[in-house]
Amino acid sequence: MSSSQITAITELDRSTYRTKIYSGGHFIYADEPEDLGGTDEGMPPGALLLASLGSCTAITIRMYADRKGIALDAIKIDLAICNEDKMSNETTITRKIEFVGDLDSEQRVRLLQIADKCPIHKLLSNPVRIVTS
Image (tube, rainbow, N blue to C red):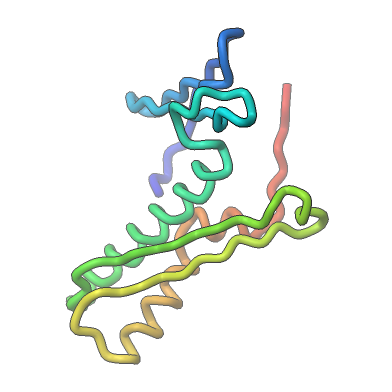
């Protein structure tokens, strides 16, 4: 993750739950499924959170593997978050990481350790304070 501050702008009008999100010249939609009143034209916010963790994890692992010359061909990360009704004082995210490549068991163990060093993992593993104005 860049050392500069990350910002995003979110816009939602009265027509639907489809939300426009802008950051650093990039654009995506978030939405809710049709059964919740949305148009299902974008990922729901929880999926965007998981996508942030998954992509950051994959990038962090790839950077390490490239730097160390590890023969890592591909990474697949499956993520899930507990249901909202299970969230009280603790929210559980499960993350299953699969590596493709000619790796020995020591390299696989090390890459799993590196996964926990991604900035989004660190952010989600600590108390987060949100200041609203």
